[in-house]
Length: 232
Ligand SMILES: C[S@@+](CC[C@H](N)C(=O)[O-])C[C@H]1O[C@@H](n2cnc3c(N)ncnc32)[C@H](O)[C@@H]1O
Image (tube, rainbow, N blue to C red; front, top):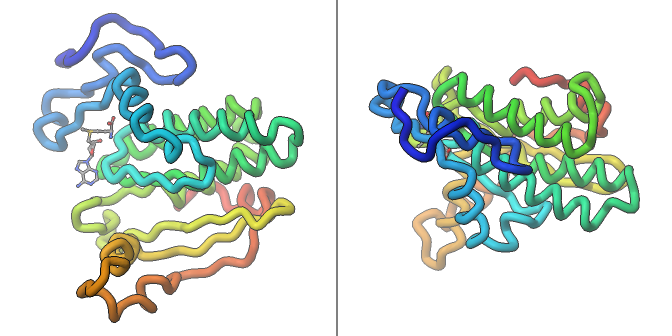
């Protein structure tokens, strides 16, 4: 184990993340094979400070294409949840639904299965701490279903899952009155959307395909989501 930054075991206050050097590198081989060096929480926070509003808005969608164990995604979730607390603490119903919606707007891709699992666990823990719920609570189980869809194991460069199939992402919406919308899109189509919007784009003729979901679900309640469980 080669320490890279800092020394001693520590927890970064309020972030729920370890700050000690051992937490930043798992093994020399993994650094060589996968460039696996995690970003320390203090640096994550400094970088997010520069992003401003988009790191705090409940409905801002954030994708980390090499998310590791979620150092950036957990920090963004905590900022979004602070916004939920500021805006919706007067209604427990609204607070819980907007907290889940905040989680729904975070996405990650990770090559290594243990990192992908840790990322889901770290996000699930931050969410459960915020709502003060146990693992078997309906909200915790709904969060697990969301994380199973949003934190994807795969290769961000080839845009493929381990089985070779194209990566898909769920686009969630909060419809109000406790109901969520889910539509799935191919990741590669989402990446072309930005180019599509450029004038004279090569992708101009593809608009319909890029905006057509691969799957559309009926409106879902938190109980529906909890029933889906955490398996992909
Ligand atoms: C430098 S680490 C950064 C992790 C995290 N973003 C952070 O800042 O703490 C890079 C991560 O990307 C993953 N990775 C490497 N190549 C990848 C690829 N082609 N697709 C998805 N993830 C990849 C590694 O397994 C590792 O977890």
